[in-house]
Amino acid sequence: MSKKIKRSVEVLATADGHCMRFDAMASPCEILVAGSDLKLAQTLGQLVADEVWRIEDKYSRYKTNSVCSTINNSSGQSIAIDQETFALLNFADTCYQLSEGVFDITSGVLRKVWCFDGSDNIPNEANVQKVLQNIAWEKVQFDQQQITLPANMELDFGGIGKEYAVDRALLIAEQLTSLPILVNLGGDLAANKPRQDNTPWQVGIEHPGFIDRKPMVVSLLSGALATSGDAKRFLLRNNIRYSHILNAKTGWPVAQAPRSITVVAPQCIQAGILATLALMQGENAETFLSEQEIKFWAIR
Image (cartoon, rainbow, N blue to C red; front, side, top):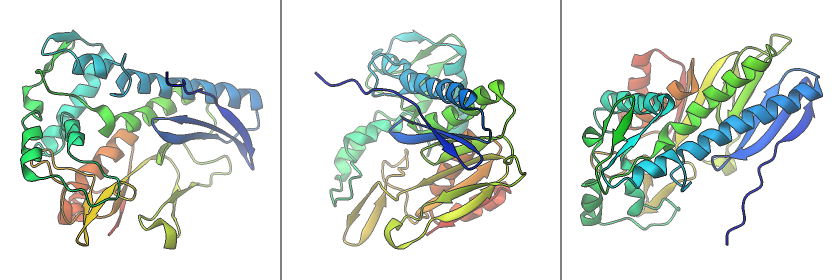
């Protein structure tokens, strides 16, 4: 029997406040608050962590009792949904339309043929084509009350779930205190305002090369920042690098995309999807983001 992972929040003092750390969504997470009140920091950390864990439990495809798993196991039957799920499905539909079908939350089934473990194990075209038959967001029917997912298809909220959790976590924190706060879930983050001395938060962005490159430091006064790239998840064969960013229409990695893209936007879910959509433009990634008139950093 598998051992249940203990969920806990660690509170540490910092130079101008407190840092609350916990693990969620397969990532190290932290909340920084610029204030000396230890009790407030402990309460804040627990509330934020509980909200992130709630979202993980509700939308993770790995959780057998999650809404995502319930939908995926529905065998074509209609499943009742709440307003939160409806809103996420609506956002996923917007992303699908904006990307002209390249971003598709039914494409998670491609994991059956792709395993981005740094090896040279590239699937054959026949296997990819077989899986593509079960990728079709346009076949999913939903409204405010229910969703009908065709049999043999699956949903995967992984492309938007963590960024949504960042925004929800910051909202929860702001309901408790007006102090400066930064929420960081595995590198996707958001801040409500500058620190108490009106200085920006200093955010490090790791270079995809990791070993021989120092992190780039970005100053963030407020707003959100999200990074997408293939630093840890890729395949390599004949000196060709295959990114884990997959085109849902072809089933194959997007070619000639930057190694990493970091985007700043008002909300994290916006920053995250813009970074992902940009990578899906391949060699035109920077042009796509320039047209959005937002701040970004691309590493090739």
